[in-house]
Amino acid sequence: MISYWPSLIGGMLIGLSAMLLLFVNGRIAGISGIVGRLLDGQQIGTNAAFIAGLLCGPWLYAAVTGHLPPVTIAASTSILVLAGLLVGIGTRMGSGCTSGHGILGLARFSKRSLVATSVFLATGIIVATTMGAWR
Image (cartoon, rainbow, N blue to C red):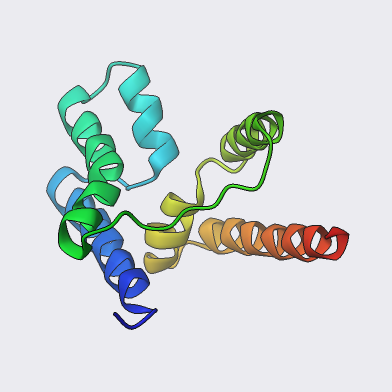
C-alpha cells in the first residue's frame, strides 16, 4: 500500500464525520467538547457513539488491511500523564482542541480558530525541533 493512503483516507473520514456531525446535529466535532458533554451527561447517545467510533478506528483499519497501524510511544508514563494534563489545560484555555479549531473552525473561516491552530502548530514545531535536538 502506498505510504500516504492510510493518512489520506483517515483524513477524509475525519472530515466526513465532522461534516456529518455538524449538518445532522449542529455540533462541532471537537473531541474535547464531545468528551466534556459526555462526562456531563449531555447527548449521551451521540457523544458515546462518536467516541466509540474513534476507539474502534484502529480495529476497522486492521479489518481492512490485516494488521493494526504501527504505534510507537517513546515516553514514560509520567511524561504522558503530564502531557495529557497540559493538553487538557490548553484545550480549556483555547476554548477547544485541534479537531474543533483545526478541522471545522478553519473550514468556517473562524479567526479565533486560525489563531488557535497557528499556536498549536507553532508550539508543536518548537517542541518537536527542541526534542529532536536533545536526542
